[in-house]
Image (cartoon, rainbow, N blue to C red):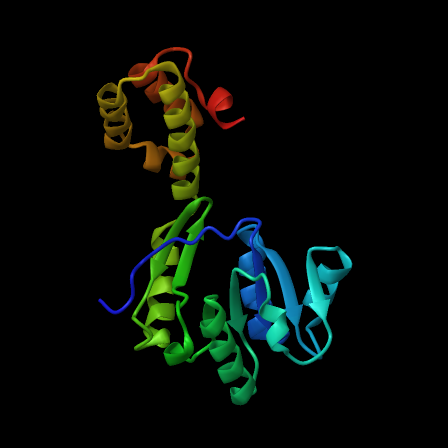
Length: 218
């Protein structure tokens, strides 16, 4: 295995994207969705990034990259069309100990970005160790068909059940048995079919009459 798999917490971290084209926009939006505090450096940016800046969600410096742009940053993504600039970003980040990703240049990265499938809080990451991004995208499309919205709904329910059980019962083994019982039922299929009343019945049967979807998901 070439890369060490990890889920990185960027919430409220100062992050930088260099490049304001369509690729930079995509990287920026992913960072924002994870709660990053985001700056963008680029002489020009897409209309969508302009809108985000107008809404106060990103800070944009309309100019070329400077090494000082990395000061205080947690990570940087280089998404420019200028190879010299991308190399400079990588070298500067390495000298400052900053996490760095240069789009389509794994040799210049300290981390690479997998293809992802998302349903709510469920994230499935697909990596080919940068040997075939095309294959990663094809696998992502296949998995998007398999993992529908019901997986996000089930995960939200299980997270709420877990928090409540932990608050009410300090017995990890007892809680674990209940989690397993829930997952052994057909909750996933019931969510897929929209049979919320049947889900309530399963919850009451396994966890007690005070457990229901309305109290757990609101």
